[in-house]
Image 1 (cartoon, rainbow, N blue to C red):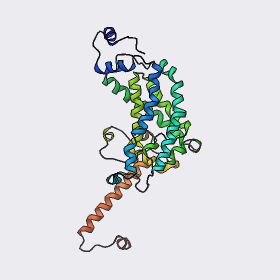
Image 2 (tube, rainbow, N blue to C red):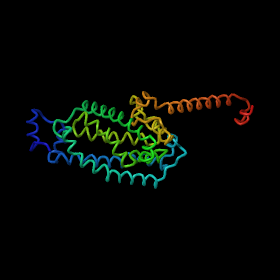
Image 3 (cartoon, rainbow, N blue to C red):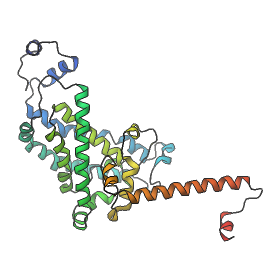
Image 4 (spheres, one colour):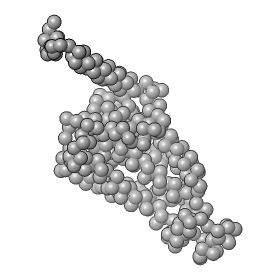
Length: 305
């Protein structure tokens, strides 16, 4: 809770006029206890999980036929009943697992120094902290994910997440409750190591969730702005991990690709991608030759020659 009775008192304490964003923050947070602001996280989590996957839901249900060409596993069809079942399961996990965790973690949030006070952080500060959070979380997530692909970890915990061999956006947080907890460790570790304002804390979890939804969307859109992020994996990269399933020892990283490259756990993916690109090139050259032939010979006959 801010220690000011009104805006004038806040501006006098800072020796300047508050920015528009700071005035809005004052009006919203001035009389709310810090623990109430902390509990906003679970509200944002449930809200954005409900709204962000909707475009992928509509596309998966066939509302936009021209989008089918971007589906990574086109033979797998989505159904509303399956999507709604996934949504209910995840929302139940949020309420029964993540919600109580948010409640009991408030003293830790206070201890590590995540603040609610004025002034608000600059955009540059927010950007740098979010980037650090992504890097820390990605590294920790990589190793936990690899451990979950051990025989015991997969059979007892991680297999639930892999029920979606062709992932959908709603299935990003679909997992065993133990996996939800342990994968939350690196996500929470990042702001614990580099604490900032609670607005940055909120934004971090919102962006991380939206990234996970895109990565599990099952669609590889060429116009996605995430394609311009260096070392970013994306939907096609993570889709391969789900496609291989239990035997997958590739593409463990949650966001970036550098850990997989450094530790050699992207070789299967790269080999398959190169093979598919080579096959596509041969097919294109073959079609070009057939257009130049005065008489087209069926592919089956050419193979027998």
